[in-house]
Image (cartoon, rainbow, N blue to C red; front, side, top):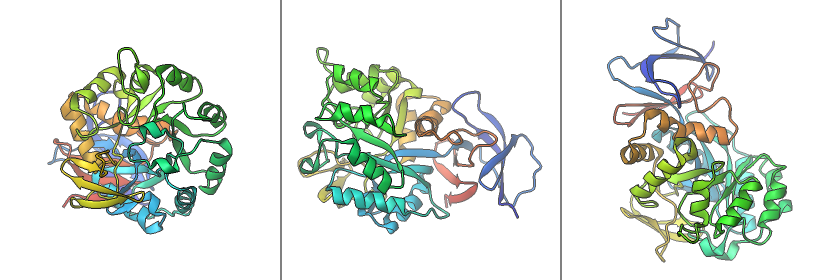
Length: 386
């Protein structure tokens, strides 16, 4: 018997076109039919008639280290499952498990662990790995431990890809460090997103990096050479380069609301990818936590190291979406682009990021205040707000 689900009387939102009230019928994790007053028989039904719900493509978080007390660098199957289970509560249906600068042995343990991961029901889909560090600048270290930073080589990366069963989808690089540009040139032969981050590059070096394939910027504004009118730096470069999509942590800690608005006005919704950059403390109480062997102090002011450096966030994608809407007054279509479609396009996932027939049945059902009511992953309800 096929696994079927019918969602009725909801406002369907895509990154383009006008929202419309309708129904979505799905079988075995795929969208089969979209219309109005569908009379399809289904094992499970969700009727939004009395709720005025919004149906959006499921959120995709391309940059998340951990959640619910666990971290990708824990290199345990339990950690990955607990992270994947926790993310559906915030509307996330897909994510990249993100590593950080550490010893080669610890990074490789994390990569092998992801390679062995077997997806289970009730979880956001682990779409691959984002390698953040160790090929980054000590000048812009942030919470990345300087002592483990190294120059990139394509031989090292090729070995990592093999160890991960080719699950590395994104790598953050500071192109100006020794071997950086040679590395980017060689990286063209791999199906990976090169992202500039933790970088002290000049704007000229940014332009050179873009010519060599850089197509994304890791957590805009944070740990990158700032803008100055005589030295536009990485910030100026990535804001002006049309071919670069920028990750944005909209928690009002990593970036001032007016800086968020500047990015929105400069890049437009098509150039922004909402991320959380969350660490293991997400969803837990304030206190002390570990990040790559470093103590992180989490309070209402965010997550910081003892020296005051920001150390990831405890932001949820649900709150990131709410904040982005409140700060910019963007449209719901633009929210879809920034929370799902752009990430799907960058990751070359042609069946995700939109609500169309034939696409994957990954959705987040929201109320009018953008609170997550239900999360549907691969055609199954994996979270319902109590």
